[in-house]
Length: 234
Ligand SMILES: C[S@@+](CC[C@H](N)C(=O)[O-])C[C@H]1O[C@@H](n2cnc3c(N)ncnc32)[C@H](O)[C@@H]1O
Image 1 (cartoon, rainbow, N blue to C red):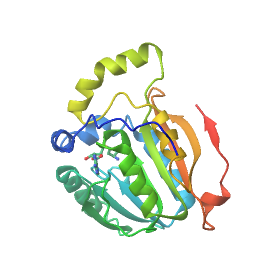
Image 2: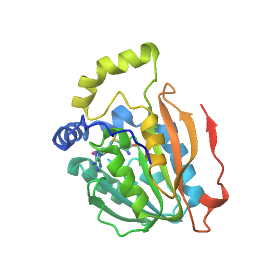
Image 3: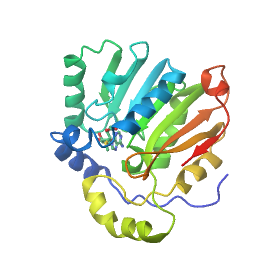
Image 4: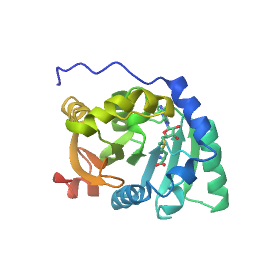
């Protein structure tokens, strides 16, 4: 168990929902291309596990058409305007493998324990008010042998980038995310969460400021267990 206290939340739900209501009409235009490689890497990792996938912070549903039709996808997001776009996308691409899309808080998922083979969250964890509470929920709804697969902003530990991220944080908050978000938060969470271990961390574009992070849940016989060992490349 970690003895370090979790930081108090520096983002609140009202700010986040207001920010994404504003982003919704232009989100795909602004972030579609720039996040694409990371998004596709996360989808490829999720498909290696396969089965029933929960995408948290599914937003405008930009990733949905890229999943194999063999995977069954559920999506949740706190922002109704973002989710409305996702519904349009499901219709436009006739995505029969999308089981449902719900307005739901990542920190209070209403799914039963052990419901999913994969919980994916791309560019989401650093935007929720209490990231550790969201990770606890991801672990709870994950089946034994399943994986949490994140694309996450990872802040710099030191140097000029760290200073810039600190300076930019108040503006980033108004935009609905954090510029400061140390990887240490993930290692501390893993250390205090029984049955979960870090399976991989790898840098993804843009600018090497983001990582693909996989956490594996003990148990089961799925590919999460077989792919097992920790890999780090960044
Ligand atoms: C930066 S966008 C990422 C959207 C998409 N996953 C992508 O890769 O482009 C962050 C998304 O997380 C959602 N979000 C933020 N806080 C949330 C929460 N507590 N519960 C569920 N979704 C949340 C936002 O509404 C937004 O759609």
